[in-house]
Image (cartoon, rainbow over all chains, first blue to last red; front, top):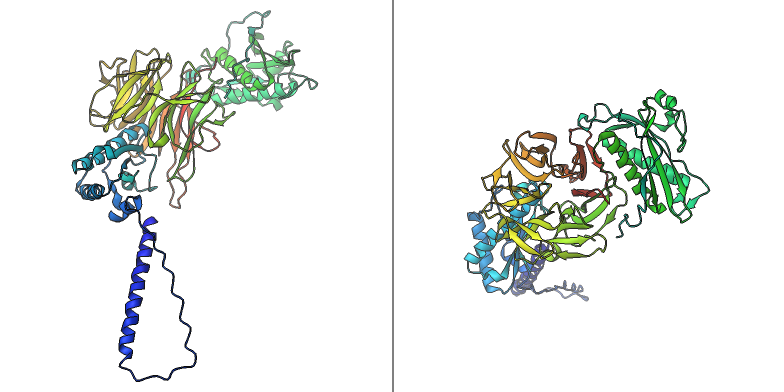
Length: 174
Length: 446
């Protein structure tokens, strides 16, 4: 949702630029036309659509999600009962690490599990996953003190039926 | 929260003057549902004229019998006869006309009285009769504040249960659990407590942070649980009397899956260090923590044997989740689960003879029991999802939670407390105001 809002603003700004250039073109071509009788009362000029510009805090979750291509991109996924970081996840974490190195923020790495297991075991598994993500970010050069690994076990699913989506690590700006 | 037992049993005495009968009628708890014992429970007789803050003494007498009836019926071991079939009405403490009770098939009979004493307390007396032999089996007298009538009812039910089964009851107990509410993808989980029959329900936390894994102290009015306060999952200790809670130790990593030792002096728990969970015991008086396992696998869900000599726990050290038993100092670790599938949440029975567990296989979840050496595995119940058994203090009933699948329209996912008799019969939903999970049974109250 945050992401969409941002893109909407971005599109508005692009749209405004296109309108300006379109006006310029119209003026240029008008020079070649025969003069047109001037009407007594020109139509009222439409009021310009106001454009609200909001600075994205470069150290916010919104900024991180944007860099990562949305909340989905700030997540890595794991296989059933596994906590190893696969090639896809490594690419995502590399980008996260790059972002962290140029932005001075601390993060919580959340470790999550699917709902097909017992509560206590999944707390432990989520801790494994959160620490696997943290370890990779540290290996990519992020200072360990900037990352806190927290397991939420199976208690915070993002999808009611897609277990693979729930087995995840999520990097959250703290 | 004030505990009921203060000022409850100023006196509790055997009613003398009748000879104890030899037990002629006996309920065999191992029979399950086969032959529930027919028992007639008459209203305790009281006066309309004696008014208390909890209604007239006559109303208190009736309400006590209703609660006793519900307790005994819910156990599955008693056929509580419909009062409409009674030939006699309640007759207080006079000798019953046994022929009239035999005529409706009753084998046991409860009679009694409730009287308002001069000091404002209610005096409740009851007698349990062997209808066939025509003798009194037991009788007790209680003095208490009128507002404690519900506890008196549970104590009477426990006395009847014990007299007729030979085993301690479990009705004067409470359940602490996780109350769940809100949308399935954003659940609110708070600590809640209630009587074993669902009454006197109370929330102990406000839901602003997640609570999991609550467990009762066997010796004090305390609960240990996992709280996500400040996004920092740690084990806490909660005092029911004062309402105060404190974190148990300050560690870098998560602490979770706590459980008291049988003497109440230690809390055993999992502690995660950089992704690896092992088992530790903390002495409550000193907060000193001792490592019990050291393995790269997940070690969690520890539970002591009744005298604290052994610990059973869950580990994936062998490649998949299985149940292990070790000495309480961490020595002599042995795997005991042997069947197909994954095994988790082992909990030692208060009687010592069995370990209850959650099993996961073939896309389903099961609650079962096995002996501490792993033999005699018996599955009691199965469903789409269920886990986390807790024992009644007499080791006869298991409570656990069950979660139903989500449906295609975004509904389903109901999460409920259930109980089942050790025989595998008498499975019942335990009614809670909202959804519920992670039940933990208290010991019998003092």
